[in-house]
Image 1 (cartoon, one colour):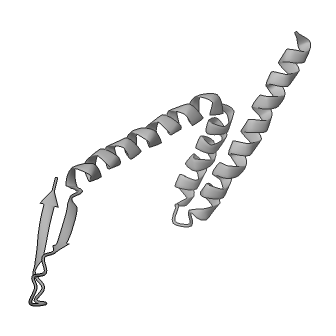
Image 2 (image 1 turned 135 degrees about the horizontal axis):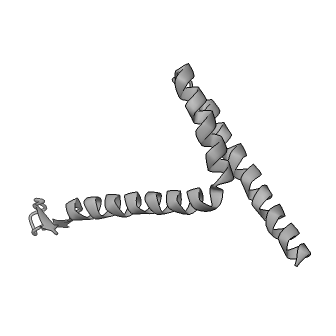
Length: 101
C-alpha cells in the first residue's frame, strides 16, 4: 500500500512539474500583461499546477469542443468545384464549372 502511494505521489509531482514548465513558458512569452495581470497569472499558474488532474481534462474538452465547432462551421461552406474541359473538334475550349454542395 505504501509503495502505491509513493508511486501515485511521484506521478502526480512529475506531471505537475511538467505542466508547470509548459505553462510557465506560455506565461513568459506574454509581454503585454500589466503588473496586476502578472500577479494574477502567477496565482492561476500555481493553482492550475496543483489542480492539474482537473484542469487538463477540462482544458482538453474545451479545445475539442472549439475544434468540432470550427469543423462544423467550415464544412457547411465547403463546395466541391468540378471544372470540365468541354473541347470540341475545332480546338476551341469551353470550360464548364459545376458546383456541388
